[in-house]
Image 1: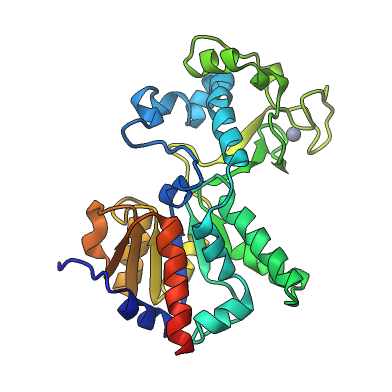
Image 2 (image 1 turned 135 degrees about the vertical axis):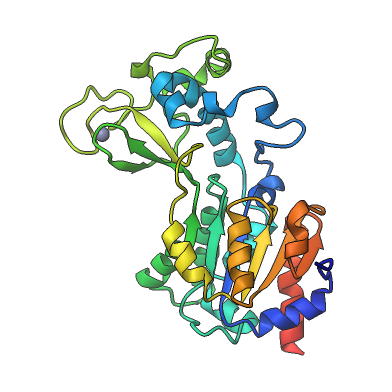
Length: 317
Ligand SMILES: [Zn+2]
């Protein structure tokens, strides 16, 4: 295969004719927000075996260790802010922006399918900001429009804001941190993370709150909460919805993730198989780039806003 093109104007011309757009994002999107990544030279996995901290088996064996690993990560996500790339992508959920940038979409009423592997919640927070700003700017946004925008964002690896009760199966949304007092003790968290100390189950986040003694009530049963994120060996969320939509997509933006690694790889393959165009946006060259038609390198928080700016300029010309 030939090398992907880096001709921005050519790509913008294709994008402005796009009938059905999808976006697939990964860790690189949030790198500019300071969210720590798992892999890479100083990534977590050089020190800890992932199967000991992010698998259902690990949670069953030692839920305190899994929580001790997850808590600082979640805390960092909550304290991070969406960057310019998150905001630029979120702007596509606003119909006036879409009409302007993507005038040929077959369904102008629906935002592009927006898939993220990130559980940091930053895509969703940027989406809320975009919707709020549009409303302040005079855009009429009814409840359905907001809901539709949120439904089109699929967090395939879950969200650090969501939790599942292991007992009554209630799905909880929590924005506060820490979720249990034990997490304020950094030494304990560090030791528990390394398997040198075991946090008692009754000190971990519970259904109904950490002080809740428990009852039989759904959503307040006192059961142990688990993060509603996808662990190793678990099936990512929303795959049916993603696959069903991707067959119609004629342009796919792959941002901050290599198009070689699953699941982004299968998304690119599906789109290519149906005659669509794939454009990759990454910090630097990655292995799967020869699958892509276009590749743009640099920090996402620069390349993505630049893409939308250029698209606006060309559409206005
Ligand atoms: Zn419960």
